Image 1 (tube, rainbow, N blue to C red):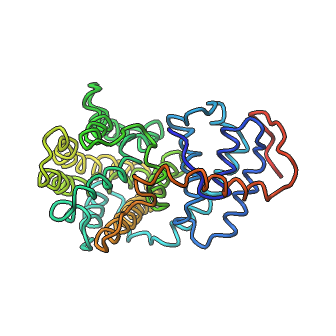
Image 2: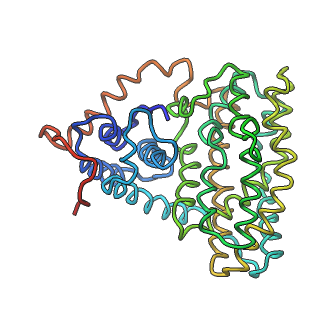
Length: 373
C-alpha cells in the first residue's frame, strides 16, 4: 500500500515507527492510549481508524517502504490490541445482536435472509442507478477501492479456522472471488479495470486519504473478525450478509454506469456480481453459516452479530456518502483534486502532536521490543 497521510498523533506515531529508522515504537502505545482517551467515538475517529487500518495492512500486502518484519512486532501488536478491544466493545454497544433462530442450517439461513431483506432505508445503489453524476461515479469507485482492490481477502482468513461443510462452502465462494484460477477474472483485478476505465489510479491505497473513518471502519471490522479465531463466527456472518446484499445493488450500480455511457469494460465488475452473488448468497446462508452453526452451535450468536454488524457499518458508510451527494457536497474527506494540497501541513501537525508527548530525542530502536508495562 502507498503510505497514507497521518490524521492525528496516533497514526503519525505509527508511520514514524514504520518509515523512520530513529522512531521509538513505545511512543505508539502512548499515542494510542492518549487518542482513545480523547475520543468519544472510535468508530468515527479518523486518527484511530487510520492507525488500525495501517496496522492491519502489515498483515496483507504491506506498506511501501516498510520492513515486513514489523508485521509481528510485539509493540505494534500491543497498540493494535488496544484499539481492537475498544472497537469491538463499541460495535457491540451500537449494534444489537438479532434474535437467535434454532441452531439448524435452514433456520440460520432463513434468519439471515430475513435480516438482510428488512432494511428499507435510502439506497445508495438506486441513487447511482438513477441520479449520480459522472463525478459522483468517480467518487463511488474511489470509496469502494479501499476494500475492493483486495476483495475477498479479509474473509479468506477464516478458511483454516473452519472444518467440513462450512470450510468447503467458504472455499467454493472464495474460488469464484479469485477467478477460479484465472488471473484476469479475479474480482479485484476486474474492479481495477473498472477504475482504469474512468481514468482512476488502481494502485492499492491511492485514495485512502480521501475516505472517511467510517469507510475505513468497515474494512477494519472485516479484518478484525477475520484475523481472530475467536471471532470466526462473526466473519462468517459478515460474509453471509455481504453476499446476500450484493446481487441486486450490483445490477443498479451497473445500470448507473451504463446510464452515463460507460461500456462493458467498466460494467463487467458489477455485472459479474449480479449472477455470482445470487449463487453465493445461497451457499453462504445454508452451507457456510448454517453449516458452521450446526457443527458448533455456540457460534450462533456470533454469526448473527457478524451479519448485523455488516449491515449496520456498511449502511452508516453508505449513508454518509448519500447524505453528502443529496446535499450537493463531495463524499470525499479530501477531494481528489486537492489530495496533494495540504498533506505536508497535515503531516507536520500530526508529527508535532507526537513530539509533544516527550521532549527527549527519539532513540534508535530495533524491530522487536519487549511489551510495555
